Image (cartoon, rainbow, N blue to C red; front, side):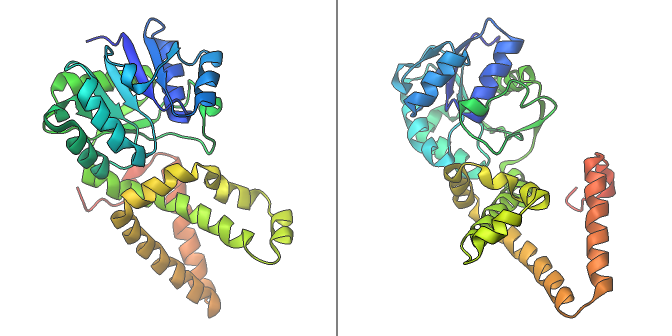
Length: 295
């Protein structure tokens, strides 16, 4: 099945970037935007990101619906879509958590759950809204699908074709594995960045601290400029895995703190050397350097 008409619910950074990428790759596809923010939707129209704006209740005859909204908005959207969409329409999402969204999809769609193919593009920027959207956002990036037993091969392939049109590499894993992996490498780093900025901003000498903050602080905290609403929802929806990752991190941070306190130069340097080596291998795409006892 070839995509001819796509409805994008949430025309922000992700939804808007999908629209721009699809428009560049397949200009004949008609793009319909739905958004709770009228000003953002107007901006998407003016910029040519979408062909038309619509209310959710008015979309029906489309090939695919992409839900690119904070996860706490998903239940109501899925419930309404389950009542109005044609049996041939496929629904997918761009949520950063998968197990909770799948549970919500099962509750909202019921017997039509096979129409929902869960997905997560591993791409983003620290800014939000359609003004931040870019057609190249997904070029060479990974997109993870967590297909359901109820999905047909054709439904999964349709969603794959969407992300391939955006220039992404598409892979699959289970929802549980997805949530565990991204709690460690995405969700925890975001929350740490938010926490550091908030802690420093609350100090009596915050003005002096931020006056002298430079590139290291900027790089570490860049993602603290992300959407608080979106990351609040992610933290709550993936909280079990995220709490486990906090515990792992705090244990290592405590060990480093103790090494600093006792002046243990050897332990401090060894930790830093291991971290630098691991990061350099990651940057070089040398993933065989890392152990994988789960395989």
